Length: 404
Image 1 (cartoon, rainbow, N blue to C red):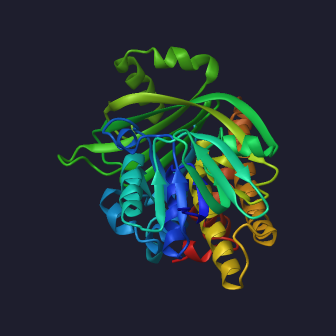
Image 2 (cartoon, rainbow, N blue to C red):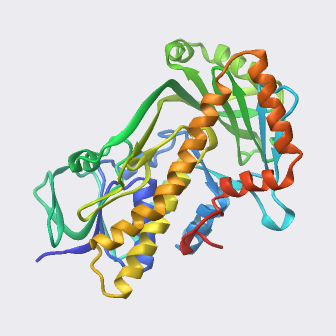
Image 3 (cartoon, rainbow, N blue to C red):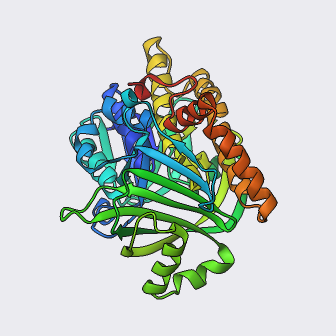
C-alpha cells in the first residue's frame, strides 16, 4: 500500500526537521529522510556548536509549538558589541526594553533534541533516519526516492535540505555561485571567571572575525560562552595542533580580558568557510531550503536563521496554494517561493560577505576608516535600529509563522 505524502524532505537536520514540523502543524504530511543516526547527533559531546536564534526564528519555534521545550536552554542576547580589534569606536546594539532580547543562544544538541521529540509525536511526519537515497525521481505528477533498503517513498513535492553538499541540488543541475574564503572556523566552549552579562562580542581582526557568544551558566554557576575563532586556512593545522594551554593563551590574548580567566570546555572542532548561493532555489516539483540553497560565512550568525526564513516562506506558500486547490508541486507556487526568498537571501549573504572582506583589509588607515564609520552608526539611532531589525529578522515581507 502506497504512503504518498505531500512533501518528501531529503535531509533531517535543523532546517529540514523544522520544515517537517511546521508543515505538519498546518496539516501537511511528509516523509523525512536523513543519513545520520539521531542517537549519535544528540549524544553528549558529539557537537559542541551553538546557534544564535533570532527574534523571528524564535517566533517560528513558538508558532510550531517547540519553544516551551527549548526555553530552559536558551541564553538571551541582551546586547551585541561590534569592535575593530577592541580599539575605540565600537558599536553597541541593544533592543528597547519592551522588545526583550536580540536573540537567544542554544546548544545545537538541545535544538536537535527538541525537534526530534516534536517530530516523534506527529502522525503527519514519517521519519526515515539512517537511510541513504539511491535514486530520486521528479515527474509531471509526483516525486519519489528509492532508499538503500529498497523502500520507495512518494510525495507531491521534493525538498532538498541536505546542506551545502546537497546531492539533490547537484542532481537537479542547479548552478551555484561559489568561492572559498581560505579560512577555517575554530569552535569550542569556554568557561570564564567574569560573567558575560548576556553580551555577544564580534571582534574583527585582519585574520578574521573572533566571536564570543553567551551561553547559560553551568548548574554549579560556572560562566560559559561559545567561541568561534576564524583563522587563515594556512594557519589552521598549526592552531589545531597547539597544546590546550597554548590555544587558551592565544584566545585570552584576543579577548582583552572581557571574560576574565579562561578555560576550554570540550573538544575543539573546525570547519572550512565558503560562500555559495544558487541561481535558482526551485525546479520541477523541487524546492531547496537552508544551506542547500545558500551557504554563508558565520560572521553574523545568520546562516540557520536564513534557513528558517525559507521554512516559514515555503510553508506559507504551500498552505495558501492548497487553499485555492493548487497542487503542492505547482509551478506557480514554486515561482512565488523563489521570488519571495531571492532578495532577502541575497541581501543577507552579500552583507556578510562584504563585512568579511571589509574587516579583512589590514593596515592602520583602513582600521581608522572602519572605526569612523562604526562611530557614525553608534551615534545614529535610526541606522542602528535598521541593523538591529535586520539581525532580528523582522524587516521586509516576513512570513506569518515568523511573526510574534
